[in-house]
Length: 378
Image (cartoon, rainbow, N blue to C red; front, side):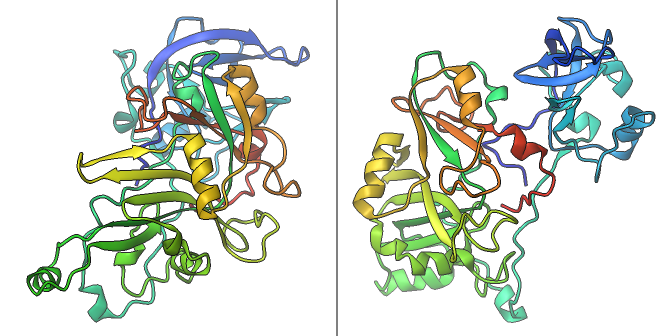
């Protein structure tokens, strides 16, 4: 299932710029800027201002389109997936194509053609619910309506104008683990059994919830999941997370450590929860609000939570944030490479301008994108 907070489009859009390949010996290729992305294209094929179809990284092509675009190409896709690649020393992201080559005879600028072209986004393997007895499978609990998924973040190339030069930001390391969430929220009466308990006045005021990004595991009986055990529940108990939370709080973070992501143990010998965001529910206004980065930092200190490393706090600069994404992990410098950084507004985190419900974007490390040995189970 596509994360609603992250952007995946296959738009018709204009070529913003064309520039030579940085390697002067490369004469047959040039660099086209599409939205905020740069992609290598054959020299002389496209013009500035021309309408093109842009297929981003992680697009899965149907066989018919893959055959059209790669029939005579030296580059071959693995499992029909578009990935970042380095060509003559330059990292190229995504694929640029003429609309008519894909059967789009009357292209409309800004329109998303992923459904028309049957291009889907690559999704990491789902956490399967295993080890359940058949009788237990028949018991279905609805997810808590206030226990929201984190829903991911868009890459900065999709929203280059979200942050203004000089705006105060916090840049935090993006860790490569599995997304986890925990909360204490008002008790919901959404089953016959719970209605009976309420009638008998045996219901608590609040209930504890935990899960991965997509699965509310606290309502799944006998959960074993993708990792063969309930990593989320076990980590919560180990770190006494619910003892640290107050009612109406939801915390989000990454569980990292051995066996979570291939090659990314971060030097840990046990699974560890690292917090990166906090959302608070106001029952009077019946609305949610995110804590800003400074508030989250204070929250982690007061409640004894480990927080993702802050790499930079200060005025936003587009060139600077690109360099912040590169290099080794701050959490553990001995790790392979830094996955990237997350840029957050210091003063306007709950901004209505953001496509998600918070003013934050991610910047990926090119070295991480190029490493095909990375696992991406989230």
